[in-house]
Length: 156
Length: 156
DNA sequence: GGTGAAAGGAGTCATCC
DNA sequence: GGATGACTCCTTTCACC
Image (cartoon, rainbow over all chains, first blue to last red; front, top):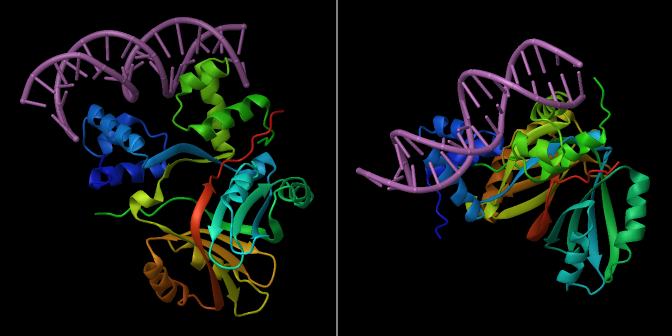
């Protein structure tokens, strides 16, 4: 299956990224195609896993998740950052992101949670139980100025 | 306007977060309500800005954005992290996130771009032109194990 | 806040190009 | 790959509770 996207595909992705609830008919109108052809395109983008998920961005404050933190995690085994550790971190629901990074620290994780007290609990109860975590260094976010996962779609 | 969410609202958010393209009729069936009542609820969640956006997660690799980096930015003015600097950083399209953080560094930004060479260019052409940036420290992501912005929806 | 009915529009698929 | 047409189902509004 091809992974080459033409300009129609890119336009679909752009519209879908801005508003995933756009109707198939509206998509077709915007790009001057028949709805059935549109449906084919979208299904193929889903099959090819170019489209990973249709999701809804929710205000974290509305769900009382007011604290955001980035935590650097150093492995006990020096430079061997086991994928087991990464998997264990990934399983924690409050952990939104787990990145294996270059440098002395092994992992960078992004955590969203209610408050500082909850973060303390999470670290004591979840992080400390993962083997091979030598140390953690937390960076607390005071204010988020921009947060989007939108990618830049090339024009072609 | 109230910001208190009942269990129906939370269930809507849960379903929408997992699949924003769920039809209003399906939502209504899942939660055993009339479609018209469902529509009211969803519209109110949009109005209250609990729902921020319906978006589509796209595989960054499909768009050739294979490099992810976190960059710590220190302001020239010591501890005064101007909101002008934050605004300037936010305007750069490759910058997905700008966080004002606690500690010596002022800002943490998340950047997604094609490759290391492009990151160099971005830093030379965009970052360096912003006044009051004293220094930057980049953390390059080697592998992303988990990445989602999904929030934990309480059960109530 | 919720229901139910009704009209217009959208989703989907078989068929043809 | 894309268009057409037809059938089904969904969206949306409105009167009513």
